[in-house]
Image (cartoon, rainbow, N blue to C red; front, top):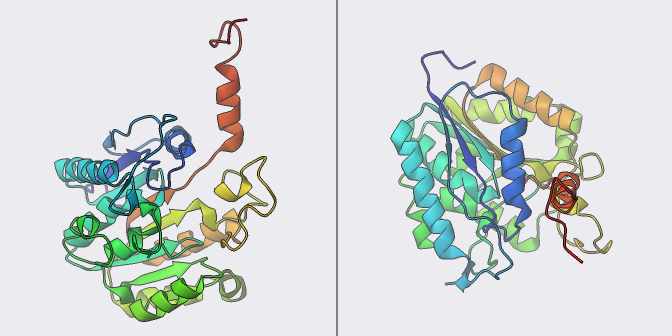
Length: 296
């Protein structure tokens, strides 16, 4: 548990352009409502509400200029408070770029990062147009120069561990080997529990830990507020894309075990897509008295 003298900043960051998926905005705001009461200051990065206008592709990245502006604004809010700890409620995965970069600076590189995710997030504009799939690469000092410029002190590859990643593409597997990034698969977690993660944490020698928790690491048959559980899509819509295989209880157990031995200074939660709540919200907006139903 954080000492009472520590300052924990809660950053609400409803960024959706990084994955070009408008419901991430609502997902972040709902996370804010669902989360326990904050124990410190709260700030929200201003992100425009989604519209029907298509997002531009700028230098190979969708909505690049908007994302860079939000990145800089997030860092200004963090620097305003200079917190000891950060909680980030996103939004797409890119929301953790400014917070984790800050924490690695704040603790002089003495930071380990547990990346709980079904995907590695190390792509560059050469492989993909959406910046939410580039965030960990940026934190390591790779990728688009303007995003990398936000990382004054890159995180050391040996201080990063994936949990829950499965079925990486051929390119991703080669990049992971080249970068020297370790991984604990869902099967290994089921067979050995938290031990491989705790052993890795001990091997880093780092005294602080930041955790990125992409909800898509969860099994979409058990938890439905995920991209892969989107209603009314073809059964083969996500063929070839890794989907989560973990249950909530497994993640809670792992992060509890880690928090028992590590000083957790960062927690980012990303990619919440509450389809049913969004459908209900949209329905309520069309009802008589409470909403603005279309007139005959």
